[in-house]
Amino acid sequence: MDKMRIRGGKALSGTVEVSGAKNAALPILISALLTDEKCKYSRVPRLEDIRTTLKLLSHMGVIVEDRLDQSEVVLSTPVTAQTEAPYDLVRTMRASVLVLGPLLARFGYAKVSLPGGCAIGARPINFHLTGLEKLGAKIELENGYVIATAKKLKGNRVGFEFPSVGATENLMMAAVLAEGETVLENCAREPEIIDLACALRGMGAEISGEGSEVIHIQGKSSLHGCNHEVMGDRIEAGTFLAAAFGTGGSVRVMGLRSEALESVLVKFEDSGALITRGDRFIELRSQGRPKAVDFTTLPYPGFPTDMQAQFMAVLTVADGASLISETIFENRYMHVPELIRLGANISIRGNTAVIRGTEKLKGAPLMATDLRASASLVLGGLFAQGETEVSRIYHLDRGYDRMEEKLRLLGAQIERVKA
Ligand code: EPZ
Image 1 (tube, protein in one colour):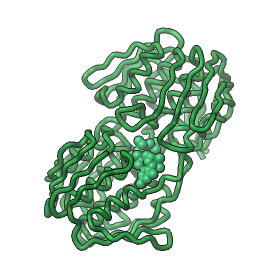
Image 2 (spheres, rainbow, N blue to C red):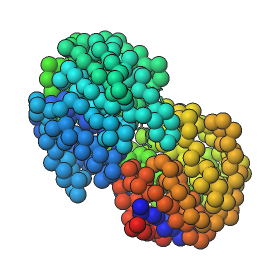
Image 3 (cartoon, rainbow, N blue to C red):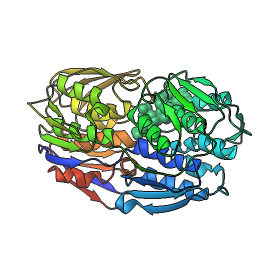
Image 4 (cartoon, rainbow, N blue to C red):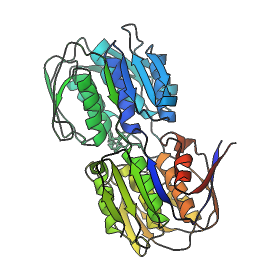
């Protein structure tokens, strides 16, 4: 297993372009199941989760033209496609459950393995299933699989108990081919939802309200192919800005709209950074050591849970004590014991973490446990004096496209050590 070797203590500076957003690309690639025509996607990030998605889709009979070396993918789904998503693929990537909606909508049948939990939580899919039942699907659970059938989905009003990103996406992809109108209420408002809606509209879907709590969808009898460029990855951008701030540097990240990350930018400013919001870039300039700040993770437009671990790494070197509340996932502090190995002072009470900043982090061998935790450990290594090695970085490769190359562009001393 590869490791990342980091020599910390150097201020980062320079400009870096983010890749396409993982959490937009995954549902958008899966939405190609909704038509037999060619769907061409650009700015697709080169990630393990993308490769897993392409493997799943081709297993199902989707014709995959993989041009990931140019960040492009072309997909088309013949009417003979298989409507099953097997356990060994779904368990490696939970987002595979997003095939449920499009398979039901197009083929009237789907057999998808229950995803099971992951390092950060149980990750149930009850909101997905109750929503699909509201559109007329029959849902059965058998031997760890969801078996969903529907002669023809019918539009309906679906209110989500919680603004779940995945449930909103699954229901959007089911409703676009259902009979009549669907109104989704209490929807997730994340920018990735808006990008999926744009891709669906590019296929001829009639959809409005995305990015607000209520999404209206007028079902069509069929959809055509599309040509869609994936939005920039706001979490990757936030990770590089955190790297700049924790090392006392100045960095410009290109390729995204700053509104997508506004709640994090405000926190960087509260902590003493100088932020410039450009049309398609964000710049962070450090003005001395970060100051302690508190934050709570919330659904968009609140502070994103996917930036919690990375911002915590910055707070381990801040001046003062900070308070973090993680309200989205029940076990998203796996990075804490590893950051403590660097000399961080963090204590956890339930879903709250208290971080007392120090100026003396020291490099140490660390082990990654999940995607954003591994990013947090790389940041810790950049902030610490001396050498840090992060093992099990296959977690990192799920969601970051050539992270070490981009960090080296910004002056970091980091290299991947092949196992
Ligand atoms: C998406 O996961 C993202 N993944 C996650 O990013 C992100 O952390 C999360 O949204 C929140 O923003 C992708 O987009 C592929 P949810 P998702 O449904 O859809 C509970 C990363 O690091 N819930 O909004 O699974 C759930 O357990 C990943 O890139 C139910 O109880 O998130 C969680 O506590 C990690 N029942 C909360 O809701 C359901 O049916 C939010 O989950 C669905 C969710």
